[in-house]
Image (cartoon, rainbow, N blue to C red; front, side, top):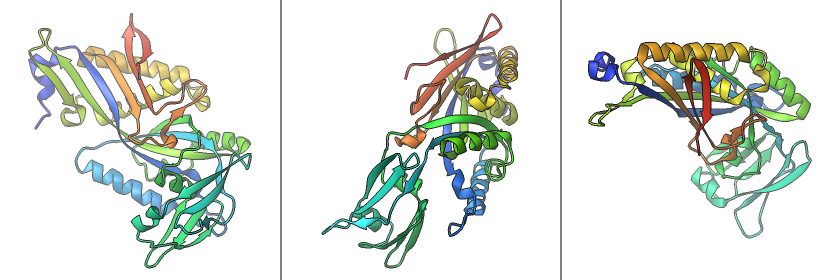
Amino acid sequence: MFSDFGSIPAYRALPKTLRIGLLQSTMIWNSLLVDIPDEPGLRSEISAYLKCLKDGIDAYSERNFVYVIAIRPRVRILEKPRYRWFAGDLIVSVAISNDKHREKIVVPASYFFAHGLGYRPAVTFTSRMITFDGENVKLSIPVHTLLLDVQVNLGLNSEVTYVGRTEKPGARVINGDHRGLSDTLTIALERQDDVFLFSNMFHARHHSSTPDGDMVFIVSNSLTDEIAIEPETDLVEKLLIYYFDTVTQKKTRRGELGALRNMLTKLRDEKHISAVEMSFEVDDPSEYFRFGNAQVAYSHRHAFVCELVDNELSCKVLPI
């Protein structure tokens, strides 16, 4: 229905801004992809979920994924959790950064009732996983998922180490067969940190208006396909690579910046897109989604604009 919209003269000749925002993000703890004694990995289940997500989205609007790899201080369960006297709350002791710091996490009784586990379900655990065996339900969850569920923040951040793109998140994101993940695992092993994969989908919109303001256009790129899916995904990837300036991509940075400059030049000359605004923010207050690194301040929201000034690439951080 909208494929010819970009050819309308009143719209086509107007200078435009392309605004890109996060549509959906899936967090995966890399440790769950590896089988270890007494803790079978969840690789096949995670892969099936990502494939299902991809197929479901493609049924309405084809999209590719841009993934972010990040490291966080290690968190492990220290000892058998215990219930409080005269209450249904559960106390879980965790060690942070290889036992350098310890915290006690309170899982409220309401959490168990919400999951159909009843009052004081039986508890078993390993350092990474905790299992609740209730009246009619048995639930096993990773320690990081538990922290997310009960909304516990430990004052930790997610350090971005790599940005990549893929058409097949059910394979590429989790198969471990690429340099970004292997380099990150090397860093994490030295620091004794945990590695997380964030598989993300983005939504791009064209914004423009007539000089007198009588007409304002806000058009979803997925409806008009003014920018095809492959160039759109490439653009998002290059923008995040430029912004986060990750430690594992220093050697390829010059080439990535050249590619980004060429993309912006083509968008300006062919689509009258004068600037691209990028917003990266997960709709969840958890510290798991507070991203940054040595180059970028840690924050839940990252916003910046890139454009060409005298044919040279110029990017500025937008106020939060």
